[in-house]
Image (cartoon, rainbow, N blue to C red):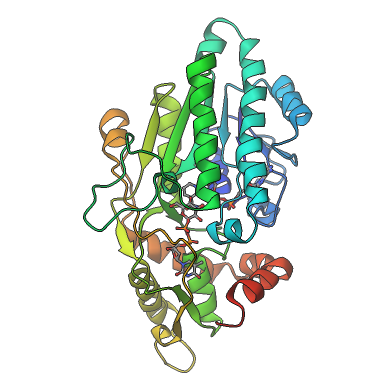
Length: 354
Ligand code: NAD
Ligand code: DAU
């Protein structure tokens, strides 16, 4: 039995679905279903006794303690977070609460539970913390990629809150000996990603005939990894990672945002040409830049490849094609998440510019 937090979100849900496709070990899925959590994503698991969904806030210590006592997991994999940089700029408080206080609460609950274990059970327990490359800050064009020794320099309220949570995880290993593992991954894309993020937003706006907003000059660079590759990397770290260590995860795939948007437009031109026959790229609109927008992220994934034997299976070309096809084939999922609060976010954040 493992506990997963945030398993109704983009990466957490992909992780849960992949895990239960490949093995029979049950999962307790702890998620309080914020705007980014979607029970619909987990519909394929309805009635599956291996999936126990618990709608609980990770800041609720008593509820988390009860889950540890009831299910006696051998690991907790912590995905739950507020994850969108733009929202952290508009309202950072929620990010401090969930990402910092929530992680601290889980660490305290895990420490109490782990202290009560003995022998093999105690030695085998793991707290795996899912983090981001954004904690390392921004790179210049010729800087080497982030590795596990790169100094932290978070620039947004989101990345500062994730950095703080990483530091707590590190301290709980160093001070209390809690067997922690931390992963720092680059930008994920794939099925079930909430369409506030660049790739699903571009796909959905394109086929909806709307503008495709690109911040600033569009030359900010991100490293992109297909989500199931990230999930496989996390399983690998859980199995083989050394407690107390951190592992960078990336796709060796740096792309400027404008190139990503053009790739999506070309893929859509082929798979779902616009009714008017106009290329989707005509819908691109450069808009006001994100405040404090990090210029470049790049991941050196040598360590996880060499020490643990993980490598990404998808290329950007295969991953993007799968992603575009998935969004085209799942209009009902898209409709379910693009109503109400999503429309409000789009109207206020882009303020009529797209
Ligand atoms: P997401 O926003 O899609 O999902 C977050 C999930 O956490 C949602 O289901 C939400 O309901 C849940 N949640 C939020 N606050 C909670 C709380 N207080 N209690 C319980 N559940 C709560 O996020 P994602 O993109 O799937 O990211 C998952 C993790 O991976 C995050 O920790 C993020 O920092 C990290 N990460 C994301 C990326 C990426 O590109 N998306 C890359 C690297 C690391
Ligand atoms: O690097 C890992 C991080 O990747 C994760 O930790 C975050 O949780 C995840 O949200 C993601 O952060 P980004 O800010 O990089 O992702 P986003 O999809 O919001 O933006 C990707 C790039 O595209 C970024 O440079 C901003 C730009 N962008 C984004 C949006 C939403 C645009 O140009 N236009 C947009 O409308």
